[in-house]
Length: 46
Image 1 (tube, helix red, strand yellow):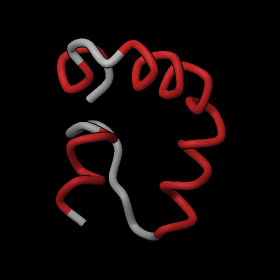
Image 2 (cartoon, one colour):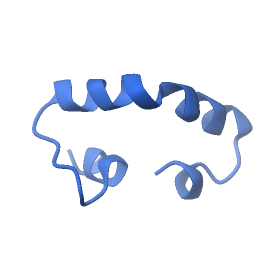
Image 3 (cartoon, one colour):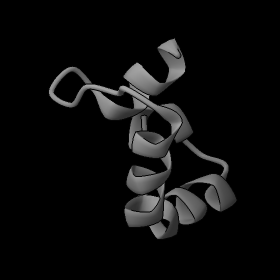
Image 4 (spheres, helix red, strand yellow):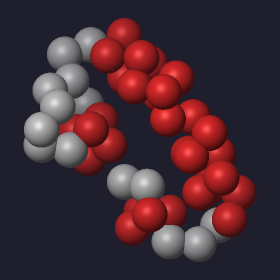
């Protein structure tokens, strides 16, 4: 689950996949925009 730690950062603790999906639902629009741009995905989002 190390990729989840990168996504959530150090402030939030990921305890389950439910935690990830709850976070994803809140951030899916920004994630989609960032991925579609194809530029600086890691810098802008992760």
